[in-house]
Length: 283
Image (cartoon, rainbow, N blue to C red; front, side, top):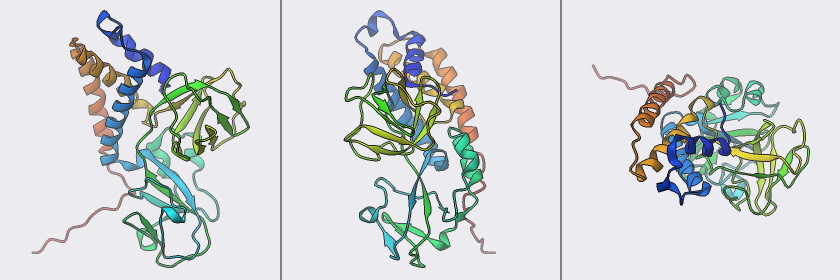
């Protein structure tokens, strides 16, 4: 189940926060807590399975040995999970159709480049062969962004523009800040963000809309955490808020712990495409 921010806020309230002690709490306060929980949960996932929260950037080398942010490399990259040669086309056929199942997206990466053909050190991506052509898809893990929702201002076949003041949440002004996150309309059109222009608040999505969102449509930034574990976002949010109100949260904690146990077991499974360190034992 993919939850919009509206649903996460409603479910958080349904856990008993609507009581006299919480009379001063508004949706922005709840949104802040949900964002904190998303950071906490995604940090746990990134430590074990960075591939679950990867986004990508397509890059064309120009014959240099190394490239940094002044050469077109995206800001915010502190590690690279994989490089894919897409000079002859992308291999993401399956994952394009099921974008929220991050645990499956690398099953479709058929043209992976091994580290003998590239390296990443101190924020610099290097190609020992100094290639000057081809296109490479850089897959790198990201920390999810704070959620929001708003009514659409305008749209085209593959873009949507939002108002200056959102219904809940706010927009970050830096270009490309939301790349790799997902937008969901209230008529259930889910799309990945591939470009963001902060000055105009315009998002470009990876696949054309089935129906261009009208200016009555509500659109949400949704969490990239796998849908099967998104209940953790509102459960943990309710626990944190109710704990501050000194309310009994034992039942919610049990629900939360059960899902966390399932998540921990799931992300602990062997990742077949990750390089394994082999230690030679001296006899």
